[in-house]
Every structure is written in structure tokens, then in C-alpha cells.
Amino acid sequence: MWAIWSGDRHGPFALSAKFCPRPLAVGNPETSYLDGDAGATKTFILEAHRRNPGDVFWHYCFGQRGGEELYDLGRDPDCLSNLADRPASDSERSRLRTRLLTELKAQGDPRRSANGDIFDRYEPAQRGHVGFYEKFRRGERVTTE
Image 1 (cartoon, rainbow, N blue to C red):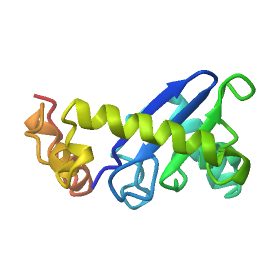
Image 2 (cartoon, rainbow, N blue to C red):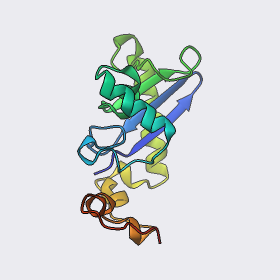
Image 3 (cartoon, rainbow, N blue to C red):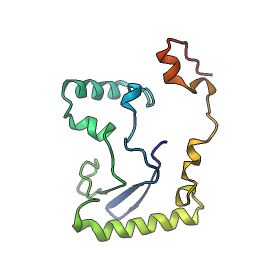
């Protein structure tokens, strides 16, 4: 199941909240990260992680995430320092969470109910991509139609 994030920004703070239980931000190491888009940056980060498993950039891109992330965009525009677990940020996090949940409810967003997995049940836009990893591992030609 994919992690489904939503967020709210108010003033200098931005909150992201995860609504489905998927521990990784993006990419699955069991599929050699083939469930994420390919590209030079992804290749660079994965190669750096293979050389140094403690590579901080791999953590930011592919590491496990908690349920919420809170950033002070005025002081940390690259969102590298998560403030969500710091007691000094409790009131700001709570205020933004309330705003986010109120807005999601007003929009009828399925993440606000027990129907958040609906995003995993949508028909694929490109049927040729269904089972991509399995086909790739079997050496089959993967179509893009």
C-alpha cells in the first residue's frame, strides 16, 4: 500500500501527515527501487548509499518516515530538519493538523475516512506498466502502452 500524504502550510510552517501505513517514503529496496521513477539523481543517490549505507541523502529520499513531518520553511527551506517530534513544536503541529483534517473533511477526502486505500484500487493509466517489476525480473519485454 502506498503512503498517502497530505499537508498544510500556514505562515513559515508546513505539516505533512501520512494516512496509510507504508514505512518508506518512496521506492522499495526489494524491487531494486523499480517502483519509482528512473533518473540521474536517483542513480546517484542509490550508488552513494551502496558505497556508504549511512548516506544522509538516501535517508531523505528513500528512508522510513514517521506519521507526521513538520518543517519551518523560513529557517529550513529544504525541509531537512523534521520538528514533529520536538515538544517545542507541539502547539504548531497540533494547530496545523487540526486545519488539515478540517479541510480534508470539508473536501470529502477519502483519507479522512476508512477509505484511504481507494488510491491503490484505481485502474492503471497504462496497463503495460502493471506488474512491471515482475516482468522485468523474468526478462520479459515491458510495454509502455
